[in-house]
Length: 115
Length: 110
Image (tube, rainbow over the protein chains, first blue to last red):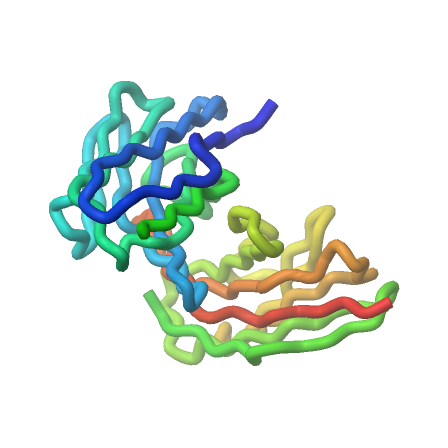
């Protein structure tokens, strides 16, 4: 069973479209994250949710809107896609958002290509 | 979170130990040292973490210097499947943020 899963794995779309990436974790974790890895391979945090509540919101355009219907899911919706949004997006989860030595488990990634 | 410095790339022969260094000279007392790796086209994978003492698990060993300004990740018997980018991350215990640097590309050669 996959601990952290993402769909779709690949997403190719036109500029200006709206798209969503879904993430689910079956680890019973309270905290979920979205990271973006650009073409230069830098991995940066975008958002973090703890028990459906937003706790980290990096300087991300408001075209990106995370949605957490329950603590096992954190979906990423992107409006008006731009060329610069092309990247690999990783979802992750952890037991909690603080505490000693908390470990994050990552999903397989979604490669988004905006044409 | 403290900044870390790692070599850009390293090579290792299959079956030999791979020793990956990391400098974190500005580390604070409440910051842990974490190691993750990313195999090509996959999500990052947790390896090990530590605060002061050396740590060992089924994947690797972590050696932290007494002044905590540097650490070494040791893969005791590297295999081809250990070829990956290895990230050393220093992180406060009270926060959830993982700040990834450029990491070290480890290539294990047959």
